[in-house]
Image (cartoon, rainbow, N blue to C red; front, side):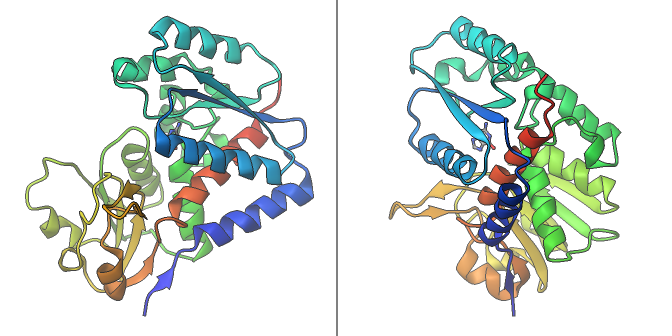
Length: 280
Ligand code: GUN
């Protein structure tokens, strides 16, 4: 029998704690978006709603789809110097024209204001540090995954963790965090040969690729813990993950739903990163 790793429920609990403690008072999250990517609008709305439930302010900065590299760099610089904004994120994906400069934009964010935890300084801190408290801004999705697994007392020490996807945003930071926690970690990518031979050995399988039904029931062992970071729209317009949930769940001990698993936890981590800022 599987158990759902309920990110929505945990998010609501943590948001309540933030609300009660009023630790968000005087803090503001900024969100930069470029263009009108449909999925991004939904994610941004979720972030705004979560801020509204706490005392954290929310401010959106939207550039046109046609915005230049210079305009975006200039907005980033403005927010770095704006003491009304505690921290901010650059919503991804960027329009095609700007995609190739993504690393440059992220590196231009002041690491102390990098609420997503994507800046090389923050990623480097995760590699160098064993304790998340010591990291200036923790990569948000990875921190959310750890928080969710901790809530359900999932063990990492000596476990075989397989991460599918090697992005700077999720795959690499979660792999490092799992290494720091004593897991034996394998990271796969789109060129990995015979993926199922590797995923079948996973005690914990973390999938962050963006491909519907990439992981099927024959690719996992019985009792596996599944963390699905994927967000895809299927042919019926429904949001689904990278894992064939209906079939894989029968073999799992724990599994995240999509939506309602990792997504809400990313938002919570963003808020926690904002709360940590000093406002100076
Ligand atoms: N697009 C999809 N997920 C994310 C995220 O966690 N942060 C940002 N900035 N953009 C995203």
